[in-house]
Image (cartoon, rainbow, N blue to C red; front, top):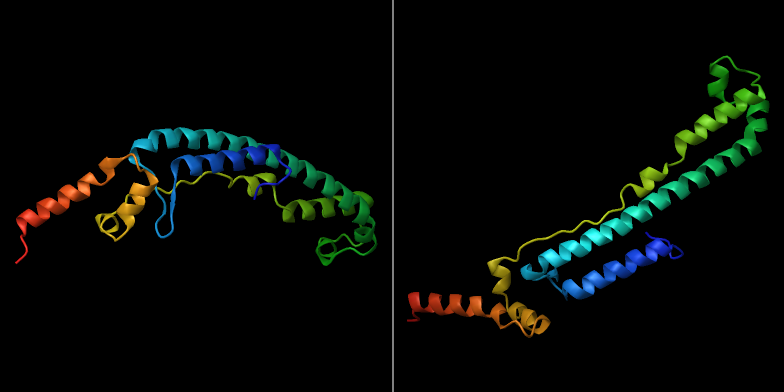
Length: 177
């Protein structure tokens, strides 16, 4: 999820919304539908969106790692004395029954680094994942779908033509009895 305070995040939200409005009308059953003739322009917009996301991913990665390092330093500073006074069994098993301040800090630092996530782990999955599927002949023959297409692209009379030609040819080959 993109932070509401992030300027880069705002740009990503705006760009994605613009791409959806411009290229991908939404059908209530079949989801987003695009025209094949718009595919190149859509792909170009997706590349722009990917660049915005990459910049955001890098910023999140750097800021998160910086925040984690500071948090780890603060936690080590706050709790190393507790480790030195009451060492965990893991240190005792290593023969360290009275850890020095250096040993306690080192132990706590290692444990915190091991359990806290890395910026790359969190931000590395930020990406655009277009899922593009062709519409099946069955979908095109469903009641209302072609009418919905005509409403989305009212100036494209060619969207009806293949269906009309197919139906006319089918009826000519299989006349009703």
